[in-house]
Image 1: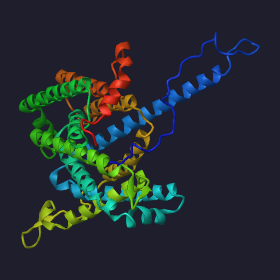
Image 2: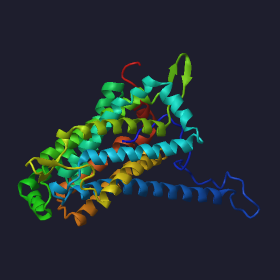
Image 3: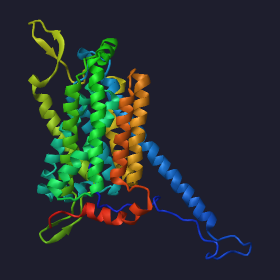
Image 4: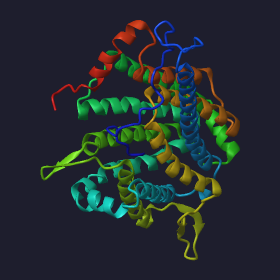
Amino acid sequence: MIAMKDDEECPEMAFEQYTLPDHKSQPTSETGHTKNYGAKSSKISSDASFRLFLLVTLSALHSLVVLTLRYTRAGVSFEDLYVINDIVLLTEVTKFFIATAVEYLATNGHLLQSIQENIIERPCDFLRIIIPSLIYLLQNSVRYVAISNLTAPIYEVTFQCKLLTTAVVSVLMLQRRYSAKQWACLVILVVGVSVVVLGAHEESKGGGVKNQNEKDGANSENLFLGLIAITVVCLCSAFGGVYFEKVLKRPTSEGGLYRAPVSMWMRNMQMAFFSVCFALLNMMRESGREQSGEMDNDDNPITKPFMHGFTKCVYFVILLQAGGGLLVAAVIKYADNVLKDMATGVSILLSTIVSTFLFGTILSLQFAFGASIIVASVYLFSNDVPCSRCAKSSDEDNEMEMRPMLPS
């Protein structure tokens, strides 16, 4: 997961609401045409194109990550599967070098000075990164277990439960307050996920998953294990994100001097550094390595060597998760709630369609109904119902959402 800072200033770009000028009140030229009308029309068109670009980028990256992960895990025998810790390690190493390069460019070549100011002179702040790094490392590792045991569409819709876990953890840790409409959306979200899961459970009882595994020759899917794994992923996402918001994203004051927040790229450097350390420690545990299914001369099982089972597609997954994740973090900086929620819906739709053709996933009307409920609840959680009555109170609802229950 990518570390971001909500308190960073975003360029005031494309999400302004424009209204066509009133010809009665606007000054006109000698030809009778309204001045600057063409310029504003051009800007509206440019804004619409930029929003479309963001929507396509977010949707494509979300779908690509899920589908490529699924592709590298499905239809592969256990002996040929890569070790999860290996791909997580290389992903974090790649992310570290990318974040370091971007930080070097962002500081105009003063990378060492940035390290001096944000790490050496602030060791306590640097060490606080250990907790979210460990949480996100666990999340990324368990994520592979979830995608190995759930189809891409079911993984996509059940992962939306992170909205519920984040809301609950935010109330407990940040004393954040949500409106009645938002809690209703969370209840509807749970109903939608329950509909999808119950439908998948009935299909697995009918032998659909078993037949698909026999067809692919892959490691067998376990719906219960997949649901446990996605629950852990959602909890890690909630705790990691809320902890980062509570402790790390605020500017600090050391020795009576104001210290500006650490940049997004430096935070990702720090988190990737600790994640690499934890992954290396985990790799050194020989007992934790998976076995290749072969025996040595002394009839002892041979563990899988480092980068066992890596293919071109696996390397693409590494680049996609490292570089693509940082790209998503940068793109979201310019996106509003409507755009992000639309990207979620489009991503689920794309993953569902591609999974049907690529993996032969069979979907039911129950899944379509449940997925529609989930997408609607996610959208309405962050956005007002499009009606005049709700528009009048939107500012009050947003203010109440961010107001703590208890004084800080």
